[in-house]
Length: 159
Image (tube, rainbow, N blue to C red; front, top):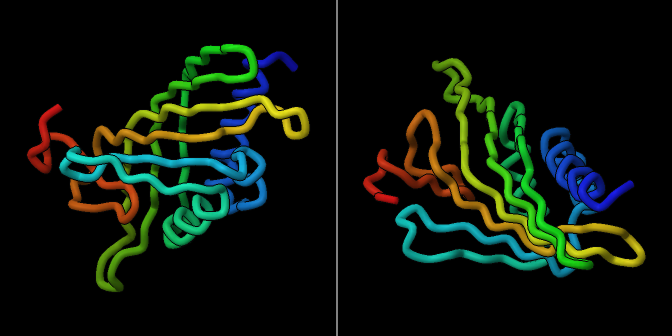
């Protein structure tokens, strides 16, 4: 498999693992020292956490609380530099969330940009060393999505 296809495969393992609650599959896409960053709702500062286990610990309750999740990350742009690579991809996630008993479930859509950094390892092949998530919008508008704060015109943050 060529490098670009191998990197697309890592992205697919990460996404399918999230959508199907396959935490072992998610872990196969990440290095042990993986870093994840996102901007707070006011876009004033970056928030980071580190480690593959910490990523799974933080994302698991969010995804498992939803009735279903589906991530779509089309048209990856991959830049190779020896044993390192950068992947840029637009991201959309659809979440079907149960609401209060007197209301029907709600579908929300979160969109943004992922910037992934990868390295080729001799034992495991390509793995993400880090992902930066820059949310662009959440529909319907809400003030939070737990670990993924929305930004954009709905909450007064200008690009």
